[in-house]
Image (cartoon, rainbow, N blue to C red; front, top):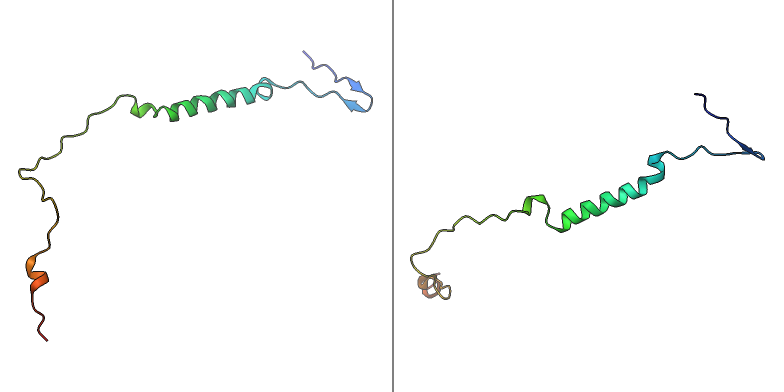
Length: 80
């Protein structure tokens, strides 16, 4: 089937009708942007099932309440 000749309007030529993509690409990009934004905001697919952290080693004695410096470092005399 032959393509119909364009309609002449004065000295202007009627533009060809837009393709589906040209007509709806702004909607496609908007929907993709919303879907990607929602995925990123919700933590992504890798965070959908929470994992329990590995057990940490325990200590047999409690840590000191304040750090102490070795007594020999502060009281040793300096010999010249």
